[in-house]
Structure formats: C-alpha cells, structure tokens
Image 1 (cartoon, one colour):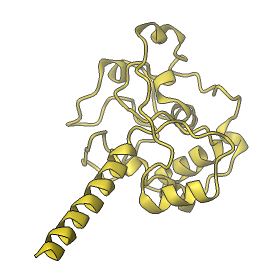
Image 2: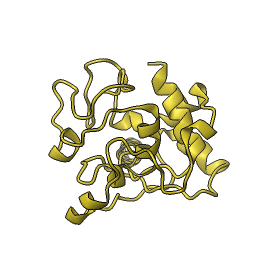
Image 3: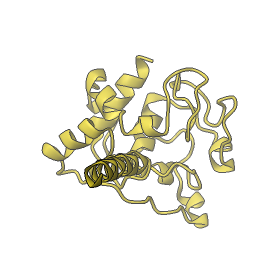
Amino acid sequence: MQSVSMTRLTKWTVGAALLALTAAGCSQAPESSGSGGSTETAAANTGAAADTAAAPAAAPSAAASAPAADNTETTDGTTLASFTGDAAKGKTAFATCSTCHAVEEGVNKIGPSLHAIIGRAAGTVAGYSYTPANKNSGITWTEEKLFQYLQNPQRVVPGTKMAFAGWSDAQKRADVIAYLKTI
C-alpha cells in the first residue's frame, strides 16, 4: 500500500515540477550574452527557459523613453540585417514563446496568436484583450521592429502585459523571426 502512495506522490511531484517549468517560460529574464551550450540545450529540451525570473513592471514614466513606433534601434546597436536567421533553430527557440503564444490563426492563449504577425498592426488580433499600451502603440510588426521588441518588450511597449523579459542573443532573435516568417 505504501508503494502505491509513493508512486502517486512521485507522479504528482514530477507533474507539478513540469507545470512550474512551463509557467516560467512566460516570465524569463534576459539571458546573458555569454550563455549558451548546455543551458540553451536544456531550455530547448524542456521547452522552458533555463534562466527565469519575473520581468520588472514597466514604470509609468517609461513611456517617455520608449522608442518611436517606427524606430528599430536596439540597445546593443545590433541590427537584423547583420544576421541570417535560421528558421529551424528559431522553431526550437520558439518553444519558450509557445507557452503563451500559438502560431495557428485565431488561436489565442495567454498571449495573442502570432500567425501572420509580420506586417500586422500591434493590438489587432480578434478576440484578444490587449493592454492600452499595446493597442495604442502605433507599431506595425516589421521584422526589424520584432527584432527590437524581442530584445526587451517592456522597453519597446512600456505597460505591455507580456512578462517575457527579452533575449539579449541577437542571433536567437533573428532565428525566431525567420521561423515566424514561415508561418
């Protein structure tokens, strides 16, 4: 009898741990530029970020420092044109995003569907409840704007409810954008 109870407890513990890892994917901290190797492999294999932490809430005064809707400058000076995105690697990296976003048209999760995001105005997916900050941002999601946004979403759209803190790895951002272009 004790063996059956321990088996159930073990299954419950493993299930709870997997649920926690999945939920953490939406609240990851920006990765350091020197990360890679086994940390990235572990994150890709679990579909969750290896380095997670809650994203800081955007300060109300941050709106004044947000880049203009047509500005695509990143804080590290990188540009999308400097990278060649790999859609296969982007699909793997997108595992972090898939906790909150679907790529199928009309499928909203915690975040809106990213189907056909390139060229779409921010805050316009039917059936999704956007924050006023996102809905009124004036952004059209070009590849370059996504590249900037994925570095630090709260910088680009202060007040967004997206808890993802961003990717400092510019190649990873380029890869995810290459993947999104295939959708």
